[in-house]
Image (cartoon, rainbow, N blue to C red):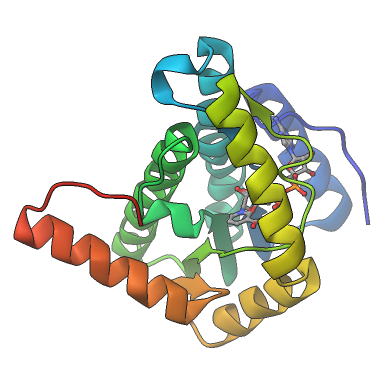
Length: 213
Ligand SMILES: NC(=O)c1ccc[n+]([C@@H]2O[C@H](COP(=O)([O-])OP(=O)(O)OC[C@H]3O[C@@H](n4cnc5c(N)ncnc54)[C@H](O)[C@@H]3O)[C@@H](O)[C@H]2O)c1
């Protein structure tokens, strides 16, 4: 293992990470763009800085990771996997979590584009989107919030993950099983995901007005 301090919002940090990884380990066989943050609150109450931070880490951070590592992986020419961590929030829309949902929808769209682009290059690199449901991690302990609605959501989500989340180890195992099975879509909670996907498909194809999931 090699620990490297890295802020994913800084392209130079990712470039340095990719360079020291290549120096130390040679080829990269698995790239997981996993860093992510949430900041809760009604859209009109969110501070611009917090909105930008969520987009900066969850969207631009993934872009920086792809940009630093993929050219090296292509030049290496060996088989490899890329996993971008989106969220079940990438296929639904939740009040007071608009910044997070917007960022995860964007991360998922970017991941789909990457898969298509690499397939067009006939690169031996598979791409997967990890869409976790609740996982008991520290994400809401470090989440910011704006306004009373934002604070309530952050506290509710923290308790929800503590009481209902799978462990990070379970989520990681699900990721590896999905990769081994060659899946693009990897869900920790497939039944809940199917419900939300059906709701979304119905809304889009039926031109329905958004409602809370
Ligand atoms: N926990 C859940 O229920 C859940 C559900 C769906 C998706 N996710 C996603 O899973 C991923 C991991 O989150 P987690 O739940 O383990 O939360 P976490 O807070 O425990 O871990 C997130 C990690 O990202 C790192 N990070 C934050 N900003 C960074 C930056 N600018 N540069 C580098 N690293 C940074 C943090 O230091 C932390 O180690 C995130 O993308 C999150 O959106 C989590």
